[in-house]
Amino acid sequence: MRVLVVDDEQRLARTLRIGLEAEGFAVDVAQNGVDGLWFARENTYDAIVLDLMLPGLNGYQVCATLRAERDWTPILMLTAKDGEWDQVEGLDTGADDYLTKPCSFPVLVARLRAVSRRGARERPTELVVGDLRLDPAARRVWLSGTEVELTTREFSLLEFLARRPGDVVSKRQILDGVWDADFEGDPNIVEVYIRRLRAKFGRTAIETMRGSGYRLGGDGG
Image (cartoon, rainbow, N blue to C red; front, side, top):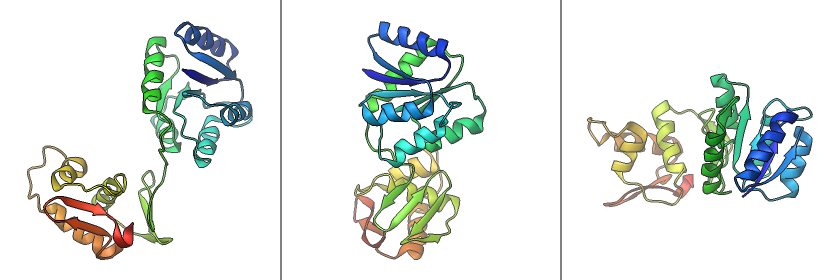
């Protein structure tokens, strides 16, 4: 595995490099956000360990820039910022995992291996399906550039389908994913919410696959 470590704490960066190389990783180190972004653009990595409080560009900016450029290299944010909203912002910006300093080195290695197993598959912070654009973090959705107001449950159902574009999703899968596995109400609640979404996005936005389930398509994708 080839890993990029972006951290301005020289002692920590050196320690990480020595430790990771002992585990069989090939490691490059950048000590500011500008250099880190350059390394990430110029080389191919299996994962990036990214600090947040960096000179030049901070970690949020580096992560957001890479994702905007459709670089999906797995990013593990490693930082002393341990507030829950710091973690939320980091993950919503496009990071794959978040660890706070100080952390256990074996845990760091395990997390790196875990994010690298996912590979550099596309993980956009926004979902685009046809004329639909969803921002899961802000819970906002647009149809052909016009924002559409949804309830929390309506958005959750639409997001569930949008994360599986082209797939036929059963009613049971929807209940488990949008409600929960212990839901004991009327399963026809799914049909109620499908009708609500069709009223807002068009009757053919969500297709009914008779006997199988639903698929996001038609006018909505």
